[in-house]
Image 1 (spheres, rainbow, N blue to C red):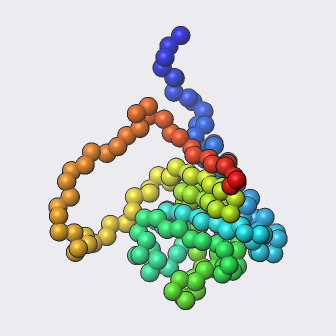
Image 2 (cartoon, one colour):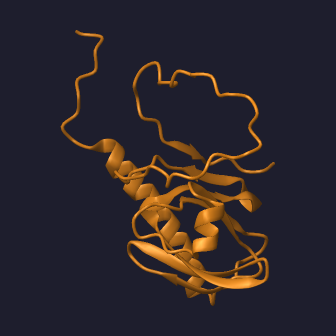
Image 3 (spheres, helix red, strand yellow):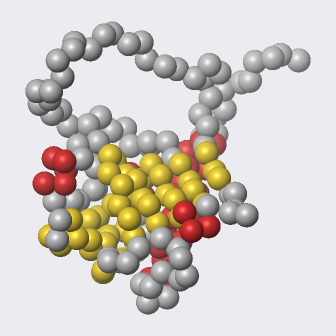
Length: 166
């Protein structure tokens, strides 16, 4: 027997990621079915890639968050709509209302801290590089060349935390 694991012809990682993202859609769908009221102390932190295809957010938010953004669905949100591939929701940013459209493929993290539940996803969209921005003027030191960190075994890991508060 060989110690090397053969390359799979079945895209297990992609299948698992898709199934876990479906959990997010199902949870949000349950909220819509319940009248868009979050039960008990449940609330959600949803982190997504702002430049992913299909994401629709105001230009001011995309400028402020050129790579990733976390939204909180707790008390003040409206018009939560859940579809097969995406969700949309109304939120207020600095007292300015906005509608966000987020495909599930753009989500990198979903957390419900009320029950210590979280899902973390790998980026699945091919064109996920952030939009270039101007260099900040507050960096006085030049950045050193830092080598990229790679996984020792080359594996792709899906983090699923089913822990509960005690």
